[in-house]
Structures are given as C-alpha cells and as structure tokens.
Image (cartoon, rainbow, N blue to C red; front, side, top):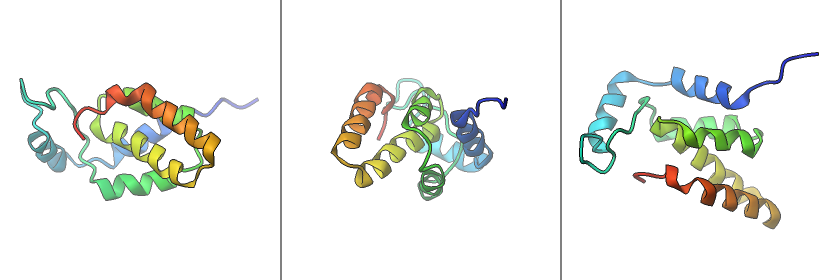
Length: 115
C-alpha cells in the first residue's frame, strides 16, 4: 500500500526551486507590492512567465483539483501557474471539460489580483 501522491505540493516545490531572488526583488517593485499599492503584500519567487509555461506543459496531466490548490498560494507565480494551466487545458478541452475549467476559474477569480 503506497502513500497518496500530493501533486500540488510537488508542483509548488518545483516552482519554488526554480525561483530567482534577484528577479523576485525586481518583480516586487514592478508589481507595486508596497503599502497602499495595487499589489500590496504579494510575494514572488522570481520565475519568468516563459519558464512557468514550461511547467504548465510538464504538469499538463495533473488533475484540475490539484491545480486548483495553487490558487491559495501567497506566491504570484504559483497562482499564475494555476491560471495558465486552466487556459492551456481549456484550448484542448471539449465543451463539458471547458465548463469545468471555467467554473474552476470563476471559483478562484479572487486570486487574480494584478494581471
């Protein structure tokens, strides 16, 4: 009897390991994360969007329920990974799957804070 694989934690660990502190510092300034600014309090790992898109493809077969767990992350790039994953899947999905993906987006749209 094996242990159940926690895929969302695996995704988060992989994304965290890909971070770059210098780029994270730049992103904090770019996205205006200071007190009273529109991205106040947002945290960054320092991963550029093209790299995040590669992770989206890498984890394309992960259940949507596991991707949805990324939306509660305090890290911008982890949430972005989740939303890019939904968009990636949506393009290839049939109407029934698109409805599920759309509903997942709507349930989590509060996590879209500065895009």
